[in-house]
Length: 261
Image (cartoon, rainbow, N blue to C red; front, side, top):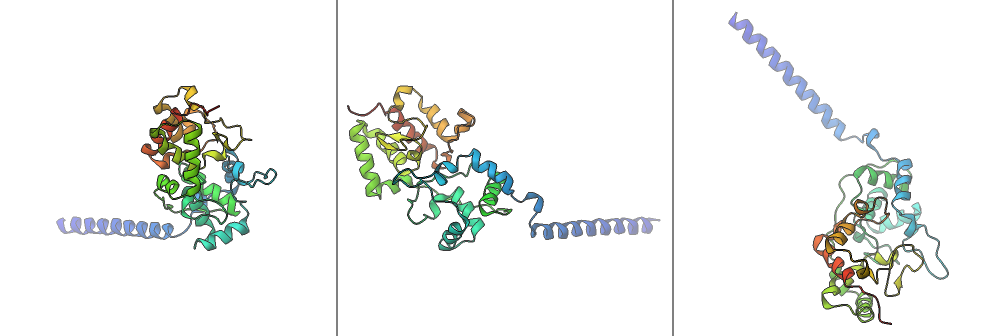
């Protein structure tokens, strides 16, 4: 009787072990195959493109001699840029969205576009799918640690811009790091500061931000998560810059009381 029980228990353990092993094999095979139900959707991606304001920089028609703030998102052009960056099309487009400083499109300044890494994986996959014209499923994309202060210091144009702002707006020394950040990122694609920037945009002029009497904490929160402060604002998150840099920008904005008359 004891022998029968031992044999029956052994058979049960063997059966369970085989079932677990089989399930593991099936799972391993499944991991190596793309899951069509989880792939990005070009149709959903079009909604992401429109609601996130991508067309404001990439598809805007130039006025006079001006050029669009961002390159045209034509598939052939993106494929050429992907080849120049040493990547295939889908991963290149994804990298351009979450880590735009990784590769500068010829004719456009590196750092002009903010990261959209705050989007969910599904939104990113959908957006890439829309741009490349077919379903796309991503793996985790690289995040490039930004060094915007160093980027401004290395650019003669950025240094000249900040020097002009400091003179026109009578900025204190404490506001200069934040001025460098605003000058080297894409803020002026939508905003105006001391006469430079997107003069035809509906976004507010930043030159007299001090008059709005926003606290440093409020400004940092707005920069980190614009939709949290004003749902549907259309402004991208600058969370990738880190809290220290966001505070520098906030100090700059709080010091911006207007230009000399």
